[in-house]
Structures are given as structure tokens and as C-alpha cells.
Figure: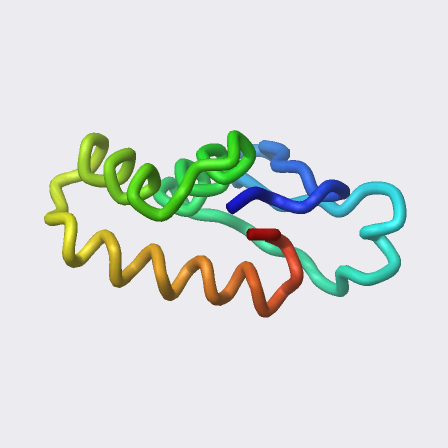
Length: 88
């Protein structure tokens, strides 16, 4: 999985915000602010990380088991898909 071209992550004050650029500005309505875990996952997706790699990154960084991390990541990935932000 990977973040589609046309979306970047920027830090504004103390918030991490997804910013559409180029043609993505036309199709992406709204704003998306990411929390600390969401930012970690986003950065891994920028690298083209797969589901297991995302789970490994989250469990290495936070006190959470793989099953819980996997469920939360699945929910987050589905939200990103619905917004048209990732490609498989």
C-alpha cells in the first residue's frame, strides 16, 4: 500500500495535516489532521509499507499487541481508502 501522489503531510503548529497538491486539490474536499499514531502509519505508507510492516512499526513504537494494532490499522486504512488517499 502506498499514499497516492498528490498528498503530502505537513506540520502546522503542533498538528500534522494532510495537504492535497496539484490535481488532488480538485478531488479532495476538506482537511485531515492526524494524531501521533496516524502520522506514523502515514509515513510508513509513504514508503509503501504493507499491513504487517504497519503492525510491526506500531507495536514497536507503542504499548499495544499485534491483534489490537491490526484491527485499528484496518479501520484507519479503510478510512484512507474511502477518502481516496491510498493505492494498493
